[in-house]
Length: 266
Image (cartoon, rainbow, N blue to C red):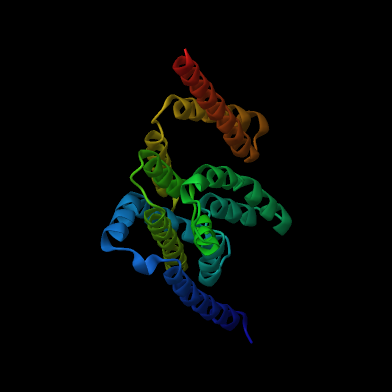
């Protein structure tokens, strides 16, 4: 049995898994979603979906150039679903890094998901484990930014959040696979697509500027990311800066709550 046949056989198995996942999504209560909920979730995610198409295609091309097959690109996006980690993995493969070192770097790079999950978990309490499993797996930086800001406004439901997450997830998976197909046929320079990544994250950052703690956390994150990147010259700088920014935002928010409490008692 040759390698190509094995890959496509695995591809069929994964498609079967997706069919089962679709059944599970229905069991999660999505069949009770009304049209307004679906439209609202897709509408909220549409700007990110557009960015994901460009970034996903670029990521697929980069991964293909690094030696990944189209099927492997599809499976990586399906199970890893982390754009920054996938770009990092591609660059490390090209540089000849070992498999354990790639796993370790991806792990540290994605540690921020623990913080994001903790921040948004309070809005999806009392949901089933299957709901939380799917919602957690489809969490990304951009999806978190949209859902968290919507939840903060108080007019957002867990079902709308799930629609947003799954819409972005599906767009990314299909776009990276399409990028792999394009990369296998046409040599393309992906440098110009870096602009889409920068523009998208700037947009998500600005949307978070809703209070003093958010602004201070963003400032701390930017300052320490720059300083630590220069000093450490390593991607771990992003993780450290994220943790420090979270503590800074928490500290400022706690102080504000204490001040408000003191004024009320006075």
